[in-house]
Length: 320
Image 1 (cartoon, helix red, strand yellow):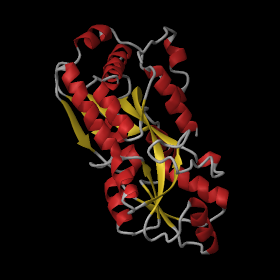
Image 2 (cartoon, one colour; image 1 turned 180 degrees about the horizontal axis):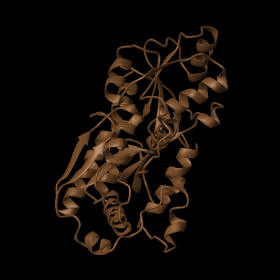
Image 3 (cartoon, one colour; image 1 turned 180 degrees about the vertical axis):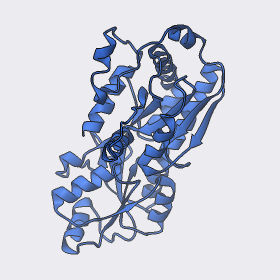
Image 4 (cartoon, rainbow, N blue to C red; image 1 turned 90 degrees about the vertical axis):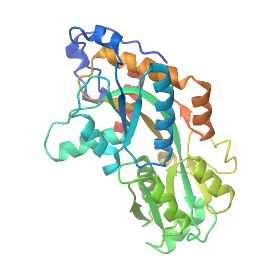
């Protein structure tokens, strides 16, 4: 999980916007990285408090603070499917003290929004992958049927009768919904939310029929108690905690069988040496047994790879 950047011409590293290359090293950057950190680090979580992303970011911040010897402060800035926090990030100094915890899909959304406005998009720098999170599709008490196939049948027989909640257009949960709608040729109504906290409360109240969300302990507890019904998961294989719940691929929705990639991003033009220093700090934190246990208990997979591997996977998510 260590970063190993191969030297090469600056022009070549800047040639492809999709790869979000790390900025070239300014004079004195290595010395600055060696002295970093000397004050509090601020991580903006692009989602509301209480969700799985917020929980993981706070657990990571605790380990980083202990390892680095400085406070690591979490602030939440939800909105626009994660792009609001990124818009704030790219205007901050590229000094290693301002980071954003966000899903890779938000990077693509921000670039697309900028393109639609006809303005240049300053790309955030992928610093370190943190986790891959399966997508969980559940039915609420308003659904009235068991199983994913019967849910699709209801949507087909009664267009508009199935409402499906996600955390916003362009998120992975929305991509799952959209691909299911296209493949099944059904009229499923999209209900967008800013984050998972209120979304889950409304699911338990039966305000809609279906919910796609990141797998988290709260949802798993609600499934075990019968308050929600697991319909499917977006993951490479069935989850150990839900062995009887099929993947979307098993159900015939291969294109919708998606999970979420989360990580830390920094402002543009972050010195390469500092990006490597940050990547090593996060990699070390992810190796701690406590954080490993925390992630795996929520069925998340800790990310393994350098900053370059993370950047490549972010680019692949954007193309998807």
